[in-house]
Image (tube, rainbow, N blue to C red; front, side, top):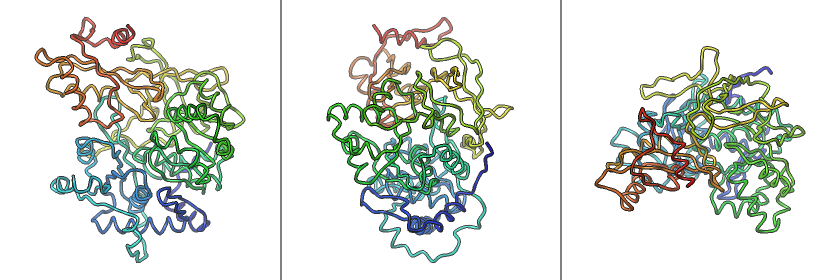
Length: 511
């Protein structure tokens, strides 16, 4: 399948001219419909506002905005300025925020009112400008017209990741590559078209909210509803929001699907009218139990298409309508523009065999690399152009990919990637902790969670030490990275060479 890397800016402008009156975004907070023409004008006004704050081409903008129309406008405006958009979760701790700003060398930080005054002076003292943006401020900004930049291709996205080592770093994507990946994805699914409307409740600080539920809807010429990030309250209002905003296509994660299925069972299928509005749904970010998926399709009456993707690669496989395969852990066929090979590797996860076949991927939509603190981009492919995913797999008799686990210590908790070495490293910095080791544990709602084992110094042990560590972690880590439980040990199980034996920690847990 031939692939063309298209210009996002050129095609976004052409799309707005072709269908100016079509709805592009619905703001759930105000029930406001925004057409493609209005979205373009608001984006340009936002860009002018950013420039008035001193933002320039190739500058880095860190956004702490939660899911909102402002967050979408700042994203699009940064790209229109030829800048680098570097969002971070508003749930992040102060130290995580400061580390992210330092790593990306941000020149401008956009924050919500709730943290504006708290951090403004500190960030300004570090040479970083911090500002707040509202829809009212954007619309009151007079846009004089004319070009914002010289037309040179530009615009990148920095996504926060701790990778496999636990050291925070920035994953870099060129906007044109992401836009082209969105267009190629759309072309594979016939039921997605200009009438498609998604519900965007995935965090816009990650690719789920920016790529899956912003760029992909725009690539269809369709629309999306921007609403607050998913929560327990969102679950209760989920189907009423589907009806209220005429949503017809969903993007689910296993956590949300399980929650919706539980809600269905408790309410006796009260929302059948909402179910009938959905043409189809996608699910990704983590593996879903086959029975759960079957139960959901039976309950809701629409197909749920599973896919496999990484932030570094975008989509690798997908199920398509008419070719559903519900064998255990099958995530569909490899996409026509992606090449996958399996390579035998050693496995560090002690719950798996010592070796397995790791997925290696070659795709035209690969990320640019990891951004280093010195400003360089670190490439992550081998001499043949393949990226090693860290995921273990096999092909079934129908040539569909079957996921078997991961060779590296990363879990997916409710759609969020959590690197266990990062949690261990932060815990080990506590003055009373001698050693820390985290393991993955199953969780009924999140799919996976983590548990932390610690050895304290002789002077500080017991409940008070555990509570002190828990407070320490809440201050250093985003909420979704917090361990569900902290268990104290007097010594870690180790090999003769001193390496912690995580499989024995699992055995301790099972006793």
